[in-house]
Image 1 (cartoon, helix red, strand yellow):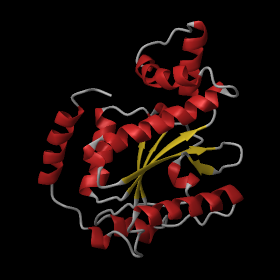
Image 2 (image 1 turned 180 degrees about the vertical axis):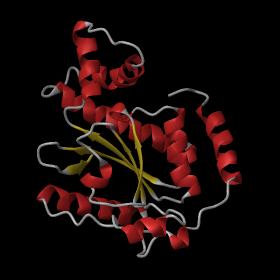
Image 3 (image 1 turned 120 degrees about the vertical axis):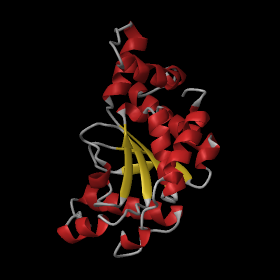
Image 4 (image 1 turned 90 degrees about the vertical axis):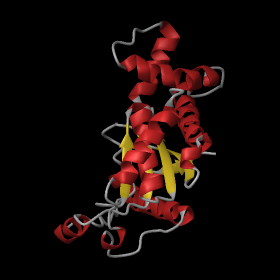
Length: 221
């Protein structure tokens, strides 16, 4: 991640602070989880419903939309992949105004992504940041192909591969599924990078892996 991140975030934070504050009290008819522990429990409970095929699809009606026009109060930031099979609102069985989602291929974060996470933590007071990786990630596969046999990486995709390669190199000697080891290592690295930045000290930051076959989310150590 670029070394000038804090300069960018300081400027972004000043601009955001100058903007009119949202009215959080009007944004939720029922109290959202107020702590990181409660927020994570809510996410995991929603995922169990999703995986079991019994989602509630909460907060998706017209009344909810009209209420949110006055402001938002999401209870978790989800840093996830752009993969169409892993939409956080569905995976965690949440609705409008519940989650602040930042999605890039393989959860690779640039300055805009980091500023977006900081907006959720610093300006909206969100207590939890969850970094969500998933199996069979296409960006991970591209990085492994490049490292294994020199497959060219065209255009802007090079940025993604360069961010993934350290995790791929670390896990290459590990027995088993190299791709899945890389997913886990890279997702954990993104979590650790966010944790290490003082801009996010106010939030709990954790990581998880989504299983495409079962639909389940499992926390990473």
